[in-house]
Length: 88
Image (cartoon, rainbow, N blue to C red; front, side):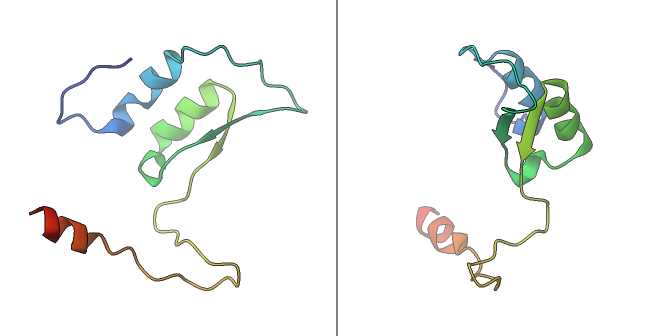
C-alpha cells in the first residue's frame, strides 16, 4: 500500500505502486509479455519510463485520443457535468 497526501497526483505514485505489487507475477518472456493497463493521466515520459523499468507492455490511451465505436466513428462525449451538478 502506498500512502500519500490527498493533494498528491496519482501519476507521481505510479513507480512506487508498481514496486509494491503483492502478488508474484511470472517473469515476462517474448511469448508471454506482462501487460499493464493505465489511464490517460499516465501518458507522460515518467509514466512510460516506469512501465519500461518493470518490463511491462503498456496499454494506455494517449492524451487527446478519442474512443471510437465499432464503425470508427467518434462516440458522444462523457456527460460528467450531470453527476457533478447533482453532487454539488
